[in-house]
Image (cartoon, rainbow, N blue to C red; front, side, top):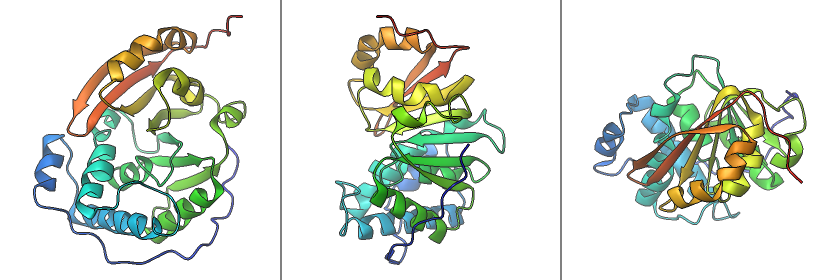
Amino acid sequence: MPSAPPRPEIPLPSPPPLPAPEGWAASLAALGVSLAPAQIERLGSYLARLLAMNEQMNLTAIKDASEAWVRHGLDALSLVPHLESLPAGARVLDVGSGGGVPGIPLAIARPDLRVVLMEATQKKVAFLGAVTAALGLDQVTTLHGRAEQLATTELRGSFDAVTARAVARLDALLPWTAPFARPGGLLLLIKGQQAQQELAEASRSLARFRCEHLETRETPTGRVVMLRKGQEERSRRR
């Protein structure tokens, strides 16, 4: 994997952490996820910085603090139960990370994982580098580039799990995510109400990239599509 470039320096707002709204902890517990108070505070600090920086650049359409806890925090953490099989030191790639969801909340919940945030927009990469440094997430690195180009590098087949949210429909998303997963690795894709329709549309891509559909689990904020990468990819049919 290429060495991580120096984290770009940008003026990062330092607002106080957002307090978790009433009922959020219960919703988290319903997912089967438990966070220590320090982790919840760190997540609140991330969300506060995300919303504050959003006033300077387009990072998220969500502006309400309570909604951010649900649509960003809870949504991202819905992947945590699917990562239970990953041992300490496992490598996770978040494709099209944008403002850092789901990668940063996952790194807060599982500080033993090595998380890479891949993003094509340089100013967003700068924010990701600055906010992860401010949060002390030393196990997180940022990567600037387009997935279709980086998939031809040594990054191909080198991650234990690949995540993505709100990047593209599944048929278009698979070529940007599946190549990075090692054989037997997981793809955890956060989807909406059309998850089953997208799976049906992507049947040929699933076969091409040797991805097995393990399950689609409904969550309070959407659906998680879980795939397992097979041993090798089929060559593209002409």
